[in-house]
Image (cartoon, rainbow, N blue to C red; front, top):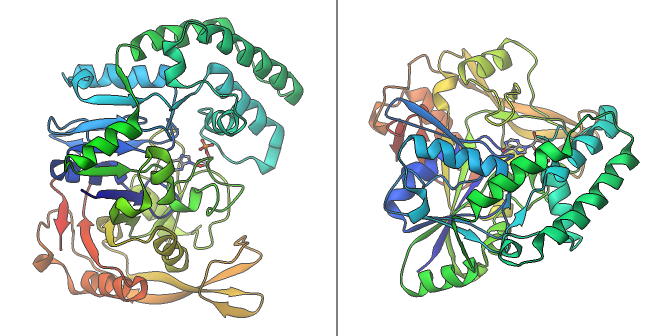
Length: 423
Ligand code: IMP
């Protein structure tokens, strides 16, 4: 049985959580493959909004196993809070959640290091979510990290202490003005570890291998977006993991030959939270409207998201890097009432027109070239069938499909599960 992948194609916040929740009924296993609590996956149904950070977005269905893969970094303190929230809704997470022994742990000092590193960068800061993601992946690749499987060993606290001591020396090195009480943070951390240890730890690659052999269907869930990928994103303004399709192979132990559908999710416009280049960013009333109507505030940090027109140059790049087979367009409803819509189809770069993403997309290097399209006035949020789409929306979708050469199979017209239209 094949594995399907679901990824964000922009700078994150495309609505992956909602779509995973909608698709979960088709799968036996939902497996998150990278990132950590920097993510904020929002799901809405029955009038309630849920935000997940580390836990896979299939957790609200009884039918699926939810697996936290080896590529994920787990902060036990945030994870515990997520579990507490699930308990409030009587979700029996213990029976349907599995954690990879090879997933790395975010320590309290990783969070402090993130803060110290960002503070030392001044204006050049990444705009990190300050959840300790970068320092944890640094320890992973530096071969110093502590993994979930270590918690089953007697000596893990010694390993913890040695690493935390080293981190404290590193924090001093930054000479950043950050106040902290590590003893308090550690009390919270060790209490959360106890809760984490009540869950089932597994050799997840073996579990997934067997699940495939038994004909089970698996959906790999990504976090962040392709333009935040450590290799293919707008480096250094990126996150520290591979958010693109290849990350699912390394983050779960799934072979590339087993991957079938690659679902690529994008918003009908573009947003970005944190620093870094954003060629189609708007500073006018159109951008302001997108932010207000689209409620564009980070689900993890509450920061306002920067907004801009859809950038097809960047989207095409993401479609190619990931080998996307089906597209899903989110938040089309936010564009209702715009008198015109613009789509960036090329860049002006060093006096030339180019249609690929160059090495440097800072504002001084690229200027977006737009195709202007007609907007629509109709409220899309009540629509449930493509036959009800206004003509201008159909034109917008047709144009994107032609440019991207991949079909748009789902159009989402609101945050609720029911506001999902299959084409
Ligand atoms: P970090 O992953 O917290 O280190 O943040 C690095 C960059 O990625 C910053 O610009 C963040 O705002 C951005 N980022 C991280 N996670 C997300 C996400 O889930 N959605 C959108 N942006 C994110």
